[in-house]
Length: 453
Image 1 (cartoon, rainbow, N blue to C red):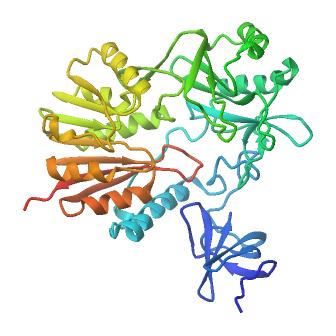
Image 2: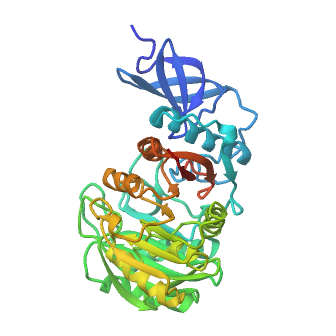
Image 3: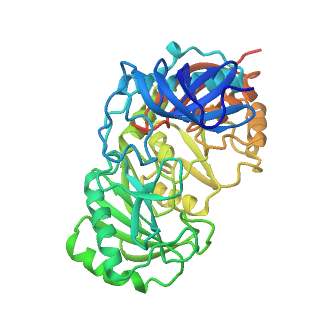
């Protein structure tokens, strides 16, 4: 009989971390995952779930602590599911992120790239770095108004009034709305009954000038219930430059929906990265950490010192965050994205940056024939978590640019994409950029060079 039975209590030492930042332990050949347990730590653990191939447990008591464990600075850390690495000293947390990337490359991509070869770009701002945040709003079991973050491992919401990742100025606005909204009779969404009006509140913020776009996620197109609250906010906060209601009537989906209603202020928020300027809407993708995005884009430029006179493809370009950062350095840039709003924003950003050398194209990279574009010297891609489509990978191998720069927010799909390209391309450098301090998430930038045959 397996020793990992539900309810069993045993002393165990963690060997490693999995990609979800859980302690990975081995007991008589079986795998045990323990949230919060760090490599090398010994703990008394209670088994809470036992499956055929693995088990899960919770820490009853830590017997031997790792030297890199520290007390979390955030008072919400034990309950909030937003951060994962706050109980680890920063330098070690960055090492562990690189370790997770290396393990995914080895296990999923059959790529041996030692951790010591991985370059690291640490975060300059480790707290209050987010320029965007959407906080879910829910009705509690007793009918109370809850606004904050999802509880660790659950769908219930816990308030986070002292969140350390939110921008301080924006956090003040979020806390004020969470306090005032129920007083104006705004009903929160109920996860069980699928009823209620307000599903979430959020912001976008430009840190250089502290101008803010306020976003309310609501279940219907009726914006009248918000008006008394908006009048209140208008008199109190001068940093709010734009206000939107994002409509999501789907009872099974609580995030942002497809339609946004402009309620006041400017139609778009002005954002800046380096010398480039951008207009963004409530739903368009833009890097969460502006300063780290600048450092990452600077790094991308440093990888391409001799390619400035050729054409560059920026695939999955969004509103053109990287496109217009590259535009002043390269002769021609082709920006391709499928999202209509992002393409519209990219066209506006092209005008604003006087980037006549940029061509913006709307197309689905799952099916678009990119081989019809001007043959590139360099291809830069920053895909969603799902990674590069198989069709696009095949086309890249056909076009065969001299260099490809892959930017990835998911090292598991990155490993798969690198494996698919391995016959035609060799890895020249691999860098992790700590875009999301205190969480398990990390951006990875890989430079690929064409293999000359």
